[in-house]
Image (cartoon, rainbow, N blue to C red; front, side, top):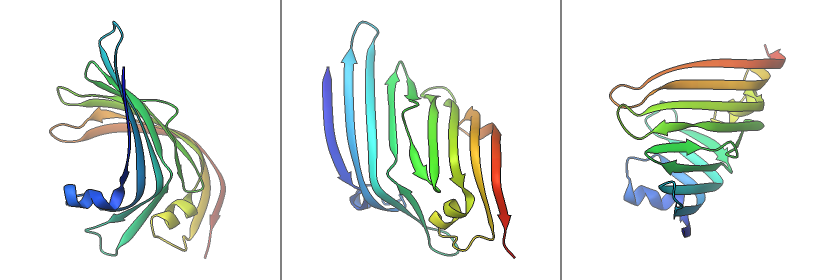
Amino acid sequence: ALTLRGSVDLPKLERVVPTLPLLEGQVSLTAGLSDQGQGRRSTFAIQGHDVLVHLRNTIKPKVLKIENPSLIGSVQDGKLVIEEESVLLWGGGRIEPEGWLLLQDDYPFDLTLGLDALKLDQALDSATVPGSWVSLDLTGTASLKGHIKGEFVGRGRLDADIRDLYVRS
């Protein structure tokens, strides 16, 4: 087995990939490679620290506050799997992604997002839309299936409970 660890200051990525949005924060990465009779398997854990994404090509400059995301998964036999331990704290709540992407053919995928206590006004505020005129709490599951290659095609479903809906005048 082989394990690699490192970290990246996100602003430095612009030098390598100038088409990326301007990023702030840092990412820690742990990657592993093993071959235990089931074929080669790569694992990864990505942990972000104080991540901000400055969106370009928008009418007004926008900054998306992602805080401290973590993405945990593996790649084996051409299939990238995102594990349920992955989490994104955003909009006053949690988003827990889980799913897979097949790295061949038309790159089919199946993604489920667990949504826990997301607050619409905080999510909009973190996307630099301050002073939202509507607020609600959202808990549930969003799912999306489709493919990426060629033309992005996806079909999804949202099953959620909405609480504390407020509309400001």
